[in-house]
Image 1 (spheres, rainbow, N blue to C red):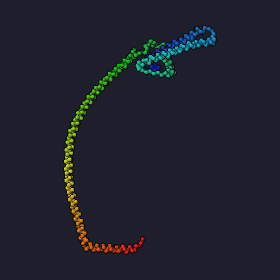
Image 2: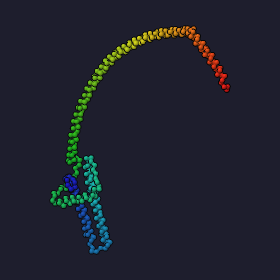
Image 3: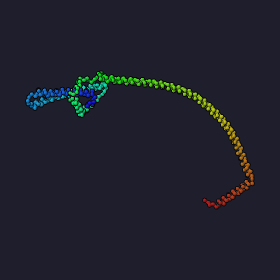
Image 4: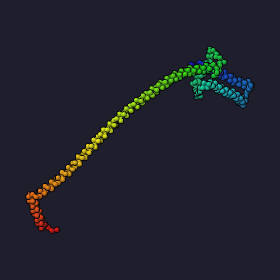
Length: 299
């Protein structure tokens, strides 16, 4: 790395461009000097000049110098565009997009750094070997440097492709093995399901027979219980009818006994005496009510 922050190759390219710019600048300065020299030789032949003549001479010199400087500035701008075009063309061949920061072109610190770099490079040029000015141009895509990089990239991609093919083959083998295992498991599952189905059918048939036997036993027991209940009901109904007859007979006997007892009681002396006593008492009560009615106030 050098003062400009570039590698050796790029720094040499910068030095070549600066040498080209210095030579162009030197030629233009010589042209400006020749303009003044021509003016001196062609116009300054008299000893005295009027103000108008001096003004005319300076105006002519101004126009010539202006034209030379403008031409140089325009040529420098166009030269820079061509240089950028070379760089961008080479970048586009690699599908790159370069960016520039125009504001950095007026960075005073960087400009001073470039000036110091130029001064250091060209003031000591007598001590350094002169770099060949006929260096090759930027290598296009079909020439040595770029082709070599492209071949390296192709080789890298081919190696990566071979690795991917190997991984794909391994993956295919693993997938085939997995499919075989899946098929085996599916067959085993089908066999197991078939065995389970047969076993379930056998169990269902056995359970059905047991259930039928149980239902038959329950039905027989229910019928027996129903028959016993019917017989018990008939017996109870007969017993109930007999009990009702007995009850009626007993009630009739009690009624006859009560009538007989009452008849016998009325024929006794005690009954007659009691009846006479009640009759006398009723007569006394009636006599007392008549007496009380006499003493009651009239409304």
